[in-house]
Image 1 (spheres, rainbow, N blue to C red):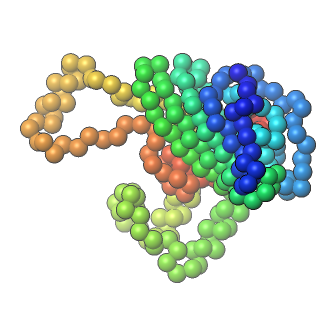
Image 2: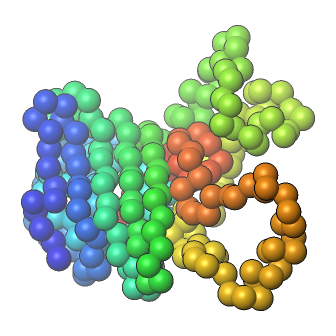
Image 3: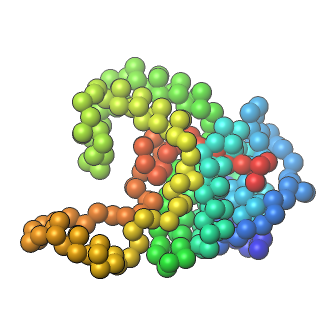
Length: 247
């Protein structure tokens, strides 16, 4: 159910936030707020939370959003959320268009923090962030940064992928950029986990035989939140898109 109390504008920073449950609604773009000076060429009226997910058509939820973002990975996230809801999940969502300026200005970034409870009772936390610029501009900035010494050489202890690859730092950064741009979609992050509880007896026997008596056997994390932010190859892939005019 659409409820305007879930949407707000921070009077100090201009950040526009939706904080509440998602619901399946019929998409409605009537009485949308008009475009302002914040809408440069290529920018559309984008919902922080889609109207088809309970978002309202007011300036507390509609902002200047680049079309690449509007119809790219942010839209893919919305598709994943809708599919999860259609399959019986519930989602508590905090979505923010980060302005860090004056109310009504163009956002720089979009963040999504979803807590998904599936029908079997298990929960997953899913996080994404997206730069509110065209993909072409983001690629150009990366190319410019690549000309500066040490740009891609900063240590990231949490990045196991880079350490496993025999490649230079610029090639690695290029791979991450290509992965973000070409990823088929983020909606798969909202599919139920393959393992969400106590295994059955057959699985338990198999696991016990594999583990043996090694007390240091690790227990992996199972969930859609892989701890990534924009520019990584995991859950927080950058440069995505939401649909204001397609939700």
